[in-house]
Length: 167
Ligand SMILES: CC(C)(COP(=O)(O)OP(=O)(O)OC[C@H]1O[C@@H](n2cnc3c(N)ncnc32)[C@H](O)[C@@H]1OP(=O)(O)O)[C@@H](O)C(=O)NCCC(=O)NCCS
Image (cartoon, rainbow, N blue to C red; front, top):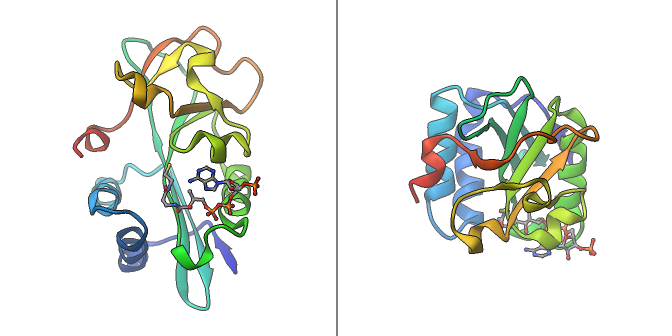
């Protein structure tokens, strides 16, 4: 398998195909298409197997509502591993390799806590940060400081691009 930090505009059909296959609705595929079209991706990484895209992860800038900071904060996701490649450590290895390439002060992700804790995320509430006023969503909202103290002094709601809320 080949890890790729250089996805291009031509890879759009591969990304769409992967996301449509992995997620139950078209939301993530449409979200990524919109973010790419508006050039809002801070980074994107892929995992290829014999010409097929079997892993994908996106990074987009996020902000803290009503607070300004010089710190570079990124939301991780969507993240997807093709069904045939899930459950064998590929997702974890792919995300660990991907995170090494990312230049940021702190990262956020909304997803399965048991999976993201294994790569160093912890509940965002530990830092006084949340996704929304919905406690169910907040329970799966995770954060990671890339250096100790990167999130200190920040609190409140972490805001993504508006498309993330249009499900
Ligand atoms: C979530 C996803 C990226 C994980 O990839 P994967 O290759 O299946 O995961 P791995 O095999 O590397 O799992 C690593 C560890 O996380 C755990 N894990 C994986 N998926 C999990 C899940 N959905 N919930 C809880 N734990 C999970 C595994 O049990 C494994 O634990 P171990 O190291 O103790 O054995 C993949 O299943 C996927 O694409 N799912 C559909 C899309 C999705 O939900 N994306 C994430 C949205 S937040």
